[in-house]
Length: 149
Image (cartoon, rainbow, N blue to C red):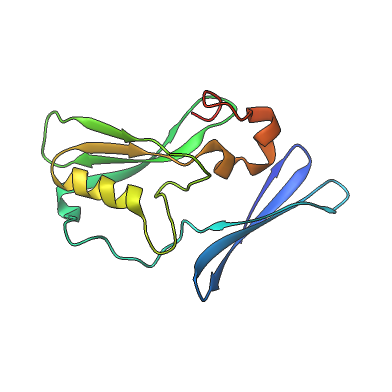
């Protein structure tokens, strides 16, 4: 279980296995320890293996941070091994609240695209939506397309 504190609120995240997949359950408590938020989302945790076309020896994956204060986001950068220069594809999230891999059920399309490209000498960068990382800040972030990038 993970926990974080922001603006006097405490959030707890627990990954739970159900018959149809693994989900993160987030419970946020206010300063009076009353439930202020309760969310279910597809978990970033997965037991799914890489696709057959992935060649993990062809690239290096790094955890980095992107964005600006106060909304830094965790990101994954995959860089091809052994090349001096290479193109970079930034994988942007579509509508909805997606994790870094675009997890939908057992599928991880953003991760699968990233490993496929990195296996062929193309660097990739991907990151989750702000709303996923900061679910209690939606009002502050805003809902415009510009606010969500």
